[in-house]
Length: 147
Image (tube, rainbow, N blue to C red; front, side, top):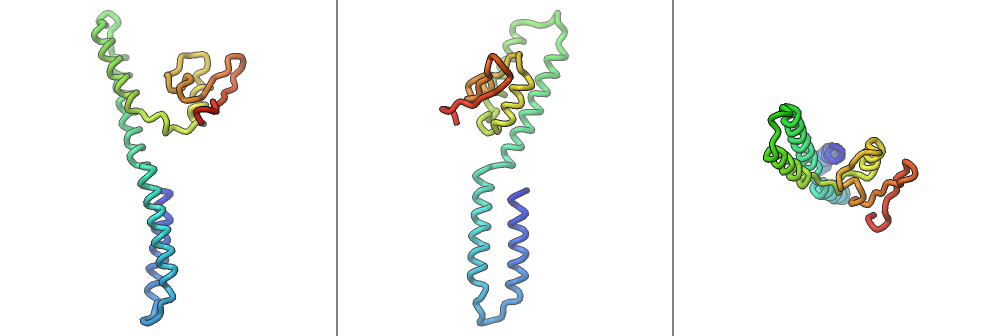
C-alpha cells in the first residue's frame, strides 16, 4: 500500500500537467522521464520485496498452525498413539520449513524471546538466527557474525 500511493499521485499529477501542454512545446519531457523513472523504481522495489506474497504465506501458515493446534487439543488422552504423534510432528516440521524466519525483523524475534524467557524456543530463535540470550540477565544481543 505504501508503494502504491506515490505511483497513483505522480501518475495523476502528470496526467493533469500533460493535458495542459500545448502542441510544439516540449517543456514536459524532463518531468515525464523523471516520473516514469521513479515509477519504475518503486514498482521494481515492490516486486523485489514481494510483500503481498509474504503476507499471504503468513496468513496461510497462521491458519495451518491454528488447525494443527485445534486437532491436537481435540485429542482424547486415552486415544493418543505413537503414529498420531509422528503425524503431528511431521505436520509441524512441514509448517516450520515453510516459514521464512529470515524475513522476520530482529525486533520481533527479540520480543518473542523476551516474552518466552525461561521456556523452550524454536531453533530459529534459540541461537540459530544470531540472537543470543544472556544467561545471567534478560538482555538480548545479536551475534556480529550473523548480522
